[in-house]
Amino acid sequence: MSDAQTDPFAFTRSGEPEGGTDDVATYAAMEFEPLSAEDREGAIAALSQPKWGETTLNLGITLRLAIAVMEKSKPELVNIARNMGEDLASEFMDHLQEAEGLFRAYLWLAQTALNRQLSACAVVVIEGDQ
Image (cartoon, rainbow, N blue to C red; front, top):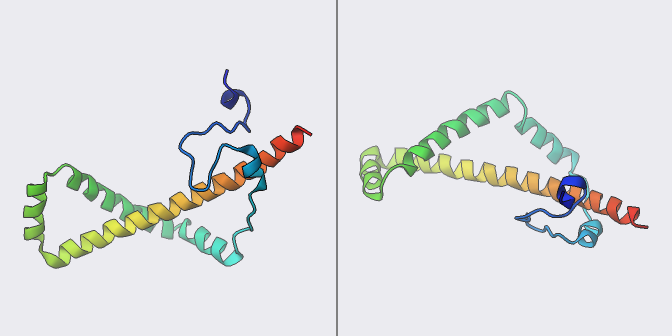
């Protein structure tokens, strides 16, 4: 078995997030402050019902439309763009950009939480070696 399978603190991840590293000492030295109460409350509200339900409904619709776009050729998309008109095309682009922004924010949240947890685990690994 590899270290990653037997040791929950093994630092053998691939595709490191921004700011990430496989160096245990670097993770252990990482400094950070807790998320502010205001930011935490805002994030919790955004991820709670009914707001989360609205967000996922809108994302689901936008992503289904994105899949439809992906199955079209460029000439087909040009023809669709001509026929949908400037207002509808602009609105669709706004929805795609909003989805991209939300996913970037969720990715930042997950990566930041992962790095903080790896930092804590790295301290445990180092202290266990002492």
